[in-house]
Length: 282
Image 1 (cartoon, rainbow, N blue to C red):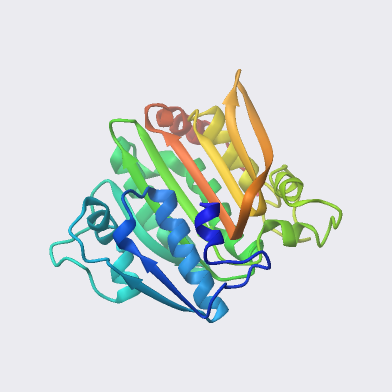
Image 2: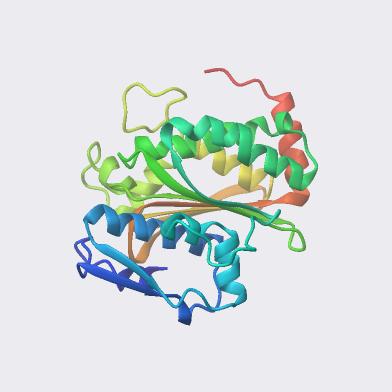
């Protein structure tokens, strides 16, 4: 994603031009992370005051149809490319989720959809819901904007669910450095992933959201969590029964914060069991 973003955003995080044209005629493949990155870049450029234009988006290709079914063109062009386009049952289409709508989105859309895809009751996914709630609320906490892009895709054959959420705010490193000014970007993100750390003095369940998400996704679902912001990134995976968190310097700059959660659906029932056994207190 970094070379792509670099075409539109310079090293000072400004738009390279007053007008940016996206040519969909050369797009041959896109995944959930790509849809969210693309939407995030659109929103970031618009925020900077650049004029965003789209061309060659009416070709009848599988990739264009996937984007159309995902609600991308309907959001940015106010109409579908193909009248027959509709949301696929394997996706939660592109949403721009406002802070005040997070609880409604999780309760009424995302969690019931996950439960339906893996044949689990929504209340059995309470732990995952709580962790995701904190991630979505971090749109307000770490980014200082009130809205973020979200998309989810189920891959039944691979037994995976990809959930991606991103904002176009100031980014995690900038906010963390207000408390710890000597940290570079990757170290700042790593610090934000440590349980108990918070950049605010009064936050419900302070500093627990991202660490809880990483722990449950990696150790219970055997999944993966990836966070990118500014010039750094962090990945969390399971290794030898433990959670392994790896900070890295990025190959570019991400405008805002990007979170990708990859859930293994064949192990989600273990997460469901834990949500019924564990009693959380606030």
